[in-house]
Image 1: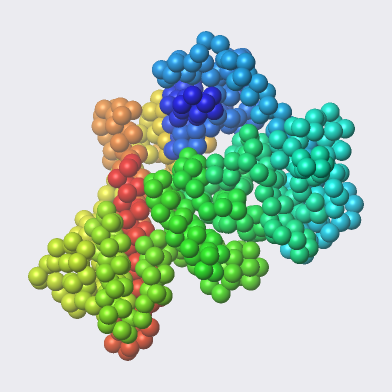
Image 2: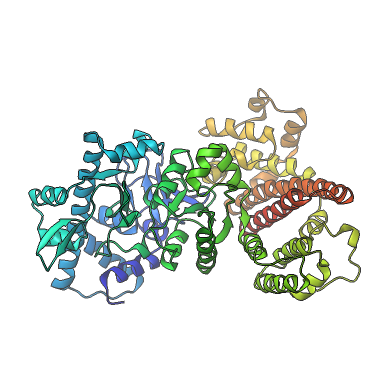
Amino acid sequence: MNDLKDIIEEIKSRCDIVDVISDYMQLKSSGSNYTGLCPFHSEKTGSFMVSKSKQIYKCFGCNAGGDVISFVMRYENVDFMEAVKILAKRCGITLQRNISEEEKQKIQEVNKFIEIHTEAARFYFSNLLGTKNPGYEYLKKRGLSDKIIKKFGLGYSLNSWNSLMNYLIAKGYDKTDLVRCGLVTHKTETNKYFDRFRNRVMFPIFNYNGKVIGFGGRVLDDSLPKYLNSPETMVFNKRLNLYGLNISKKSIKDDTLILVEGYMDLISLYQNNIENVVATLGTALTIEQARLIRRFAKNVIISYDSDQAGQNATLRAIDILLQADIKVKILNLKDCKDPDDFIKKYGFEGYKKAIEQSDYYIKYKIDILRKKYDLNNDSQKMSFIEESTLMLKKLKSPIEKDLYAKYLSDLTNISIESIRANIGIKVNSNYNKNNKKYTNVHKKIQQMSKIQDGYLKVEAKFIKLLMENINLRNAVLEDIDSKDFLLEETKEIFNYIIKNKELDKITTDKIKSLNISEEYVKNIENIKIEEINTYTLESTKKIIQQIKRNIIDNEIKLMSSEIKELSSQLELLKKSNSNTKEVDEKIMNLSLEILKKEKIKKDL
């Protein structure tokens, strides 16, 4: 770990941003984030947010934001290297007292290269929008709006040998540096210099912090290569960066990113309101890129091209993402070649539905493997089953194993008991074959105790606490939201409490004016004040935990009921020899969603 860049990354990985900022100011937990009063401007209501998962801070009042190093720089009023030294000392990493001249020069060169790339991006952008040109015509034909062109800073490299070089030299940059940046090519045998990118639509490549570090150029004639990327430089390494992450990191939903192959795929999706998307840079996904994704999201939906090359790339990406501890699904592009084609044919709603119906990676692998074999041939069927069960054996969850054992059984007409035995699941001798469409997940859910009667009691008790105790109210309001309640009446009272949180006490007379049932009010009135007075901040937070678990339990129960209905439909379809694939998939997706909900509940 001699390289300064590696040392800095190690420091950032060891210095959790929440812990560091908590040393400087008070933070309060707010869901998965933390909030507080911004230290960089005067405010009474906290607009300063810290994300533990993304390791960034942001003030929505003064727009200050960045990573842990930038926070220390701003708070301590020090330069970059001084902030690094402060954090290094904190996490026990020894830095040399003085940075070598070589390292100083390297930092200066990195900054200079980023400046050059930024100027080049401005030049290409002005070419695209300044005059009529084939680059702009191409982008308009592809359906891109001016707004989206500006959003991604797209540009055009003139059909000229030295227009960019002359522009940058006029800005004061040295020809040698332009070559080292990869923007200008030098032919040593003729000692001639010329622009690397000519007559191409230009896609500036930003690192996740929003700095221009390279370019991708798309040819507008029959020249090869079709896409040309910047070469490896001091600031640009394809293995370490992802296209669009600087924008999409602000739009991540449900800890999920969509992964596509190309620039246009990403931009087309973004223009159609699919914003949590990133793209590789013309190469197969690398473990470094996967680890970068893991810093921002826990789940990935792969949406590569549907051709053979795309399928092979998908299979490679699955293994790399799993290695980085990322959960993986695959989006089905139906009859379309790539996401850009799909969005044009089926639109936003179609792609959104495809996201929701994405297959879990193991099902995708089984389906791809199935294409290699003729399942009407016993020998090939056995080979298919052997390869498939090898994949299932690697699964850690016995419930997932059971789900895909059922799927494999349906594909091959081999008994589920045989497949279960082959993947190490103990077969119950009393297994009822007439009910084999019910999964273990469903059996587990059927045994859950009914908690509906407890919903009103626990929510009413929490509301009573908020009404009676202003100190507890102020301490926990940021930990819960109206959407966390099951009962509409609780939500209505909760919203009323938020609007009147400054009141010392909120009486039942005040909430009777709301649309609240007599039963609910009676429940609140029956809770004795002596019982309320025994509650501490810790015990109140346990009530919040129970409320959040209740809503998850309710979601699980609803999905369980749906599984039961679908299972009945499945039996009818089988009796009539109808196609059961769609219902099978719905049951499987619901079962896996239940697994996800149970994991969330366990982590609360």
